[in-house]
Length: 354
Image (cartoon, rainbow, N blue to C red; front, side, top):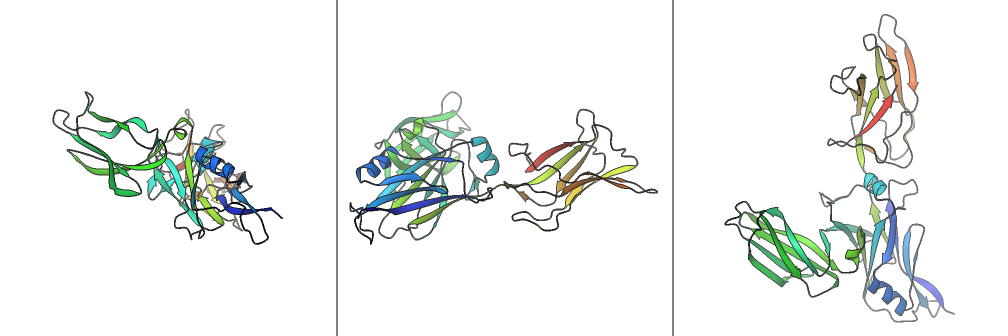
């Protein structure tokens, strides 16, 4: 009896979400991959946690209907909600932030490791394009640049080289490239000039994907030693929470009263902890919102982004002696908005008007 067996399955995990798996990605096999799946009677389908590829088995021990040789399966993915995903996801890869124009590539290498780790592809381009260096000439009259195109899988294989590239009238170096492979090929662009030592950038050439809004690639190398289940992990961001309390309705007389902000949590829920918030002078002597006085509280440690809100951050009004009193203004202050303001000090700003 013919049944379907799993060739490989990918779980896409994201620790921002309570259930632990991502729900932000639209995953599509590349054209070559889709053709291979169809021609070899395989089935690709999405799952609750990610996606899987299955094959037809002709017996109970899993013998495939078609003998599957070593094969690279390539999938591209886009974001359902780019604003939300980029707001909650830490895209620090190998110590570098993902820059504009970069894409992520996940690859199951080595084959016996379940976790699929990311790397950065700096450029996704068609096989013919004009490359512009990321820096300008210091001395446009005399500086010259060099561009080498190397095979990513064999850096000793020099595909192209351009020497003595002169800068244009604005000081930029540009070079037209025509690469021999149109789809699914990785290269290294090695650049240098009179004032800059050689620097490498990873280039992925694909005429079809270049036309689409691709955020990343997933490469699964199948062989007899490959695992059935893999995990692709995205991690949440963390930030300092900065509460800016705006005394809009003059509820606080800072000459005789102060605001107090405390985390009153008794039992913490993973991944949260109990946090302390530092406070400067009240009213704050630097921040003034439309003429209203403010009090500013900042968490002393980073707080992770998480789908489940953190509760029990209280705001109180405390009267100074000789007649101290305490009035609770908020039992649960709001968490930062996903798309809210995060300043250059990695502080997620939360405005509370009282």
